[in-house]
Amino acid sequence: MVQLRGYQRETIKKALGRGGRLLIANDMGTGKTLCAIATARMLKVSKVLVVTPLSVVSVWRREVERYWPEACFVEATEGSIADRSDLLSYELQQQGAPRICVVGYESYWREPLRKTIREAQFDLLIFDEGHRIKNRTARTSRFAHALADQSPYRLVLTATPMTKGPEDLFSIFRVVNPEVFGTRYTEFEWRFLIKGGFQGKQVTGYRNRELLEQLLHYWATRVTKDEALDLPDEQPVEISVRMNDRARAIYNRLVEHAISEVTALDGQTGVTLSRVVITNILRLKQVTSGFAKLDDGREVVVDDSKLNTLKDLLIDMPQRVVVFCHFRKDIERIHEAVVGMGKHAWILQGGITPDQRALNVEQWEKSESGVLVCQIAVSSLGIDLTASNTAIYYSVDYSLTNWIQCHGRLHRHGQVSKVTNYYLMTERSIDVKVYNALARKEDLTKSILDLSSARELFL
Image (cartoon, rainbow, N blue to C red; front, side):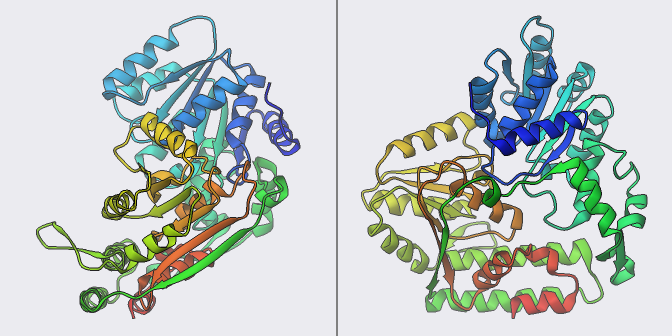
């Protein structure tokens, strides 16, 4: 039997005390999955639906086997949507052991799986990495709202429920308990948000903060790693990289192009401005990584400066290392370089099945000095990388959620050594601005509210 920690017992007690409806916002690495499974077991439910990113399916399988071995784990995440639907339908007709059915965010709202899920009438819904449903208009969120209306028990698990602000909470609590904030976003806006800016559509402040805090205190749990775990420190190390003349010339032309594109949007804000800003951030970050994309789609290497800096770091690192990067081109080049150095390397990126990802991590853990090259969007969720205490951030993206999640892969329960995070940043570039914003816990694109702030980003 798994031994629960005190804060985990308190989380479970609160979930039961709130009628099986709770936002579990405990920090990464504190065992939210275990708390959810224990709550399901104590509720004595027979049908549980877990909606999760595919990258953490193996985590659920392992934790169910550890804490609720009597339950039947049903993994409806592979094959066609029809195959997944058929598997789920068949398993739910079986008698005996409780069924814990796991589906992915990318497919659970699609037919015919959607129909099978709705007709199943699950006792308990669990939305893991629940920030995936904070966009109230997204199809994944709208289906989550519909399911919540027919299931008595609902748990949402996420360490980052408010990367943008309290406005992120409406959709999440539409699932947890719609009585908290209601079912109409306009009423939520009127109670808690102050709007302004262009055409009065931007959130410029918040009202009734005390009431908001009271509701969150009652309907959510929040335990930080510092409160829950006796973890070693994290040490950031910033490393400047100087790009070569060819890359700098390309970079400068892209800056001019970015400024001209933003200037052409004079008077526009919101989604249109954000889309242009993000596109240009990605173009610039490709160059700081050492490659540029041509008009015909080909990716051409223009600079090895950052890659050579990484190789120099790895020469002096005899231990296991994790390298986080944003682009697939980064992964390709880094893997080739690491293997060329005579080191073992494994990859975690999109397109690799969850089982293969788990196998890659397992093989890396067994190595003495292997390098795990991780795509941030894939590896920021649900993976335990405490076998290493050294991370190198080759190229971070602009997402604060991904930034927080990535740091939680190494600095979590089970880590016994001080974690050192190396940040490779091309000097006088977008790398520095993105890093500084994330270090201040800002989501860069969310702070771009007008033409002036967008232009400033690229200057």
